[in-house]
Image 1 (tube, helix red, strand yellow):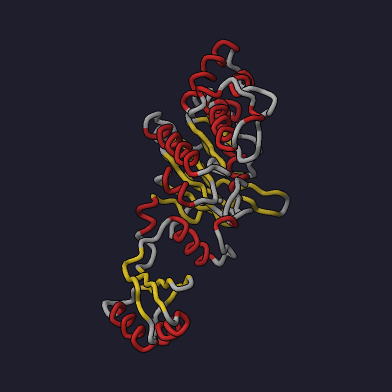
Image 2: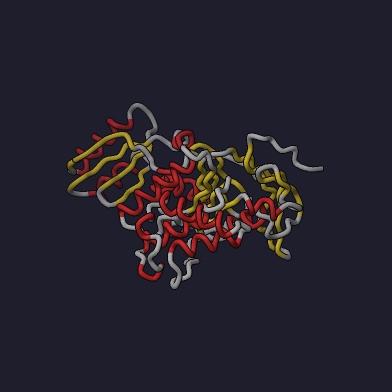
Length: 331
């Protein structure tokens, strides 16, 4: 039996399993992914790389099935790969080439004729902001210019799906903003699908509307980011002065759940009395509450909270990612 592919879906998998000997890398992955921008998140070793290799037809799945753009991942990997652009984290450029030659060569490698590849190389280098630098050698480029060149290489054949691994790695704020805007344009104006991984959650949130979170070979979250934020417990954030530890002890003695970051504390809202209890504790502890308000969690905080619930030893976002095992679930 094969997956009855929905034309609205760009990626669909059913009971996808991948084993390396006794090790289960993917555990019955079920995923239905529509077009748009999706962040692919998960700790190192979670199974992201294995997932991508499976859907690109680079490795054989143990069982299960799937399609990408309607093509069977088991038998049509070459067709799938012709529709995919990949921007790797690692340095994949030849420093001795000019940007125009590097991008043109990338096009020729995937079967474009030299004339077509040259024309497209000029177009995509302008698109990524390198029109005036296209004849310079890559060895003279800044990190931002190199990242933009890698993006141009991934876009030269006008792929329907673009996979970006750490696209803002090493960029200054100006180059980072331009990269993120270019990726947003690729989705919103170009009508393409972007799958993006990275350890800077703000970047994921800037580009992506959805996230797929992988943990121990399973999908533990697949949801819109704005919907996911609603699943996190409501918290009050306060900034205190003059006895943070006393304040925390007082709050916890009243049964409140506290997450502390130095002088900043986030207290889970248990009832309508929570704010009154916070102020009561401040008086008892002899501290000043300099700031108080409802805390709106960002994607980084949501991710860490979810991983904490799953029992993963993830303390900071640099522990989280890099493309690397996935069932379908939600928080």
